[in-house]
Length: 188
Image (cartoon, rainbow, N blue to C red):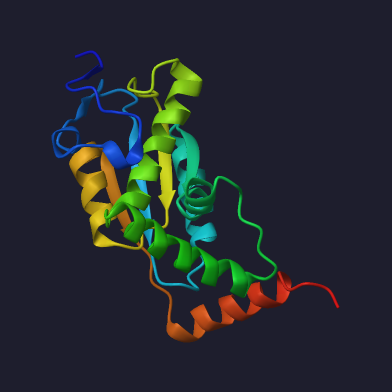
């Protein structure tokens, strides 16, 4: 069976309709495009999980493309990349911006929609068609914060989407946050 798209979705993230969310992509059994979603509380080291997943996918000849949802929020909201003075500032402003974006659009899954648009942009770079799946490619999307974002990905990508929930004990998360806050603090 060859690759085909059953319905053509729109590009603009806030305009993805419920009908498009229900569309799906069929791909050859060999080298199907995969989507992994990472979710975990603040302080969990998702970077280690990404690195491990990338290593395992490489052993089965998959290219890995990382999509960081947090990096999509501020540019979409403000038209500029986010400049943060500290790690605390980064976390606080991203949470504020995510809330503002949801309020402004009235869509609880808007950050997920930005992720879908980013996957389509990455596809288009490689295949010249945003709807054509990239064979032997796995997108690793981090990190989901709302159930509506996960639901959107499940509706759009179906069985090609796998959610990975990452847990770390509270003390370890606090330790990771403290280390990140120290390492990204401004000098002086």
